[in-house]
Length: 416
Image 1 (cartoon, rainbow, N blue to C red):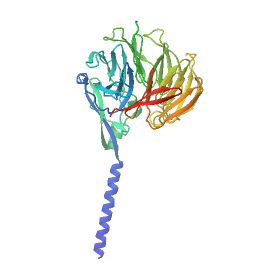
Image 2 (cartoon, rainbow, N blue to C red; image 1 turned 90 degrees about the vertical axis):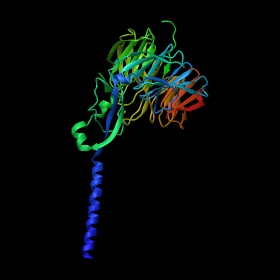
Image 3 (tube, one colour; image 1 turned 135 degrees about the horizontal axis):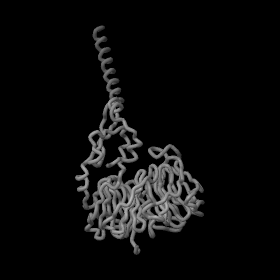
């Protein structure tokens, strides 16, 4: 009996030791992201025009004529026929690896593709043609590593000849990571380094990084502005690239000025010399994700705190920009989880993330009155068009008809 008891005790000890060892091993594992990549030559052959596809992750939206373009983050652009806003129809999908932004002028679509700028002729929407590609014009392209990864192993990645198109996640011993491949996430979350007649121009949302002004396409990356002369629409020329600010996220143009939104604040540039914008001022605030729109003498910024954006509260700021050399804070309103925003007449539409779409009546440009919250939607960005409001969130496109100090529902279109 005594021997049996000793044997059972030993079994329990071995079992507990094994469990603890297994738990310790799990605690000593961390998630590592390894780049998935292709050669630049292979990458540049991946553009394609195909039938409508389910969207993976809805990004930015763009409106042009009777069409709505929806970015599929880093993958391409979905095209919807919006002739009838009550029943939009998916008609085409342009595969553009590494894409985030587009702009359109007179049926020519300009899209970033990681390091390149690609031009498409969309005059015949049923026969879209790639007509030009400017290679290696963007020195930096965004490709955020997965949130769950604490490190990345890019040992086999050649910065000069390869293009990063995705990430593979795997578990590795913490000791190995700390000794060999531990990284500063902030660096990689920001960017990945890589070696006039009347015209028709489309409209992007407040999260856009591309803006067309007359014969120039202005683009911003994490800290640079790159300018293209598009006088010849099918053969754009890069004119310059220069440092434009820190942690840049968005670009908005109004009345001869560029308003650059960054995680640190807002920068204002004049376009007196279109090829060489002059920085006039900067409005600095605490760290936070920061799209901006401008109407008259006032700019409206949403600042989203938390996560990768900052550690402060989330707010809507109203900035007096009547003096472009000295923008000043006019008012601040508390929000929950803001993203994009837009202005139409006396209304300000603010996408407050999981808290929905918020409608503010502008009694004055500074005095805002919250008149309605559409709380049953995830709101990411809006485009106030002439006759309707377009909003995107959670892979769904919503459209609304304007009413006096309000909007009414027109349609929702699932992109999945």
